[in-house]
Image (cartoon, rainbow, N blue to C red):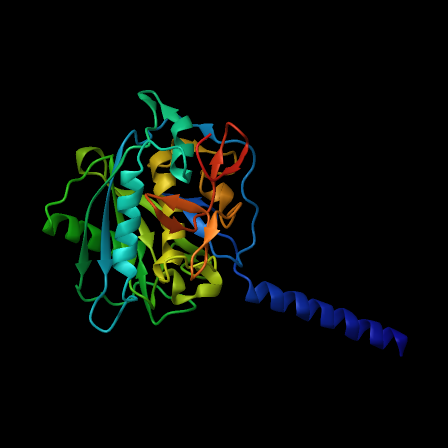
Length: 312
């Protein structure tokens, strides 16, 4: 009888462990080919790298210019202040260029053969893209429509050309998809494994740096830090936007700054928020950029071998 009870207990434990493993995501490798800096979903298991960032010889962005693309086809939507809040964030980061009081200044310690990163950002504009979605190029666990990385690239290239926007190594494009639109890059998919990533298309003067920014509050449990100081779904997406923006600045082509396990400055501090600065009527914030509150993850500093919220 005791042997039977022990066996049943052992089986119950194994089932429990299996259930937990199934419920939790698996942390993606932070880099896979040209897919870089994957923000792991909150329930994905994985360590945050190993040791300081190491320079691997590639370029950093000494200055950067950002554009936002909001892909919101008929039948899909974003919250009422989603686009305006994200645009405000990019504008605030640009206006605060050179200031030591936010996470962006931490990147100025990293350099390439042409010198150090300068906290010098420009927000050049945005557009709402209503082009119809293609047939799903992948399948994820949370949405009915799923875009492959190749499909996202094709749409980014189309929008850039249609708007006669510039290309090259100092210009970044952020593709924000509407709520309920999923995506996958290789075996990793939005909300199950990642909340965002950055990459690039082409090379030289026609290179397009881009970031895939799924609508974080499609699955809040996976990609929302929980604080909405601007009373917007955009707050959740802005957190992972900051992650990808900082990483593109310090490792745009995956051959500049990352640690021995492939983790970039944002990867090493994912979901780490440090000390709060204050609270609005809607939530806490740890950054005040150009007078506006945001809740952003910390960024990694080699100077202190730790995650930081401001210049070091």
